[in-house]
Length: 404
Image (cartoon, rainbow, N blue to C red; front, side, top):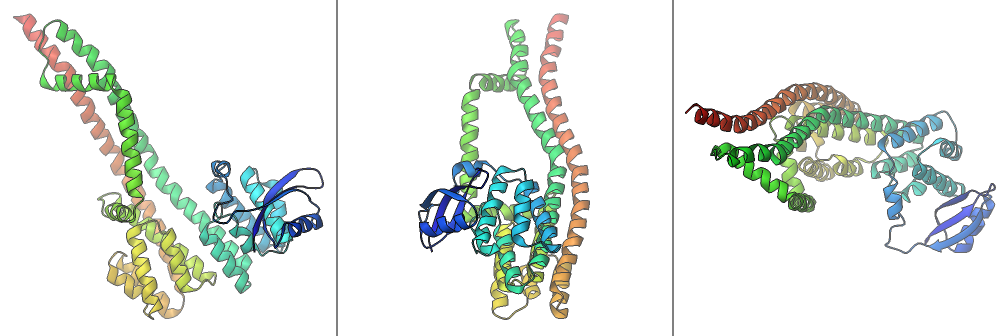
């Protein structure tokens, strides 16, 4: 069935737009007329071309907006309000323009006879595959309110986890960039002026000062070339990082970093456990759940392990057995998953694993912050000491000459 892009006006004259599936343009016009809309334009979407425009992509929907939508939608459905009324109410309250238009379009599609999952599928740029599959499972099992509530809690957990990691790295990163900026300023503008004073007086510059002087002059005269080179390197690294082999190598290195490695691993295991628990509890088949977990785990090395688990489960083996063979998951997590499989409470055990690693992640973040801040201060101190030494050595040489 073809998809059509429509533009219309409601009873108050307010313009609305969206997409809808139908057998013909006239069917779209008739559906909108029955819902009280006056159609102004209907065009058929070209197959293979995404309906979402570049302008739509620029109008981003923040994580906070999506969390509020998930929580509010789950609460309203759980309170017994029907889907259409819930969506229409939220469309009036949400401030984000793109999300407001999207919810309005979903509501119109549902009013025209579509299911919630079908209406959501038309907006892949806003709603994740995980959410779409969970809604489909909720509709099929008749447990949509429980599924929406589970996803709302899941999205809150994930947002809290990301916030913890960002919060831990924010200050050290700011400190690092500020130190680099100040160092470059001193090297490019202060040291050249300082060194030229001694060169004019005929005092020979020490090697350290001479090196920094040459670097400063080079940066000062060719700063534009350095910026272009930096942009080219960043773009090149980003292009290479998009290849499958590069992502695998980068993620392998991440897991084995001395300080950050445990942080990445615990975050990935928590995401794996929470996602799989939410999907299993929502009634999504285990093979389909593992396929989705592989996409959202956020690490190619562990995603490959999840892919192997999926293949093993399809052959009749247990999840814990394959995880144990991989040696990428901690023994305690594997043991708890094994117990969950044996007792039939896999989702409960997975949630316990996620809770434990979230707590452990908090301690790791505190340790990371405790270690990184003094380490960066020491590095900056060494840089400042090196620069001060390059400035003081010529002064000592000048004092020696004056004493003679």
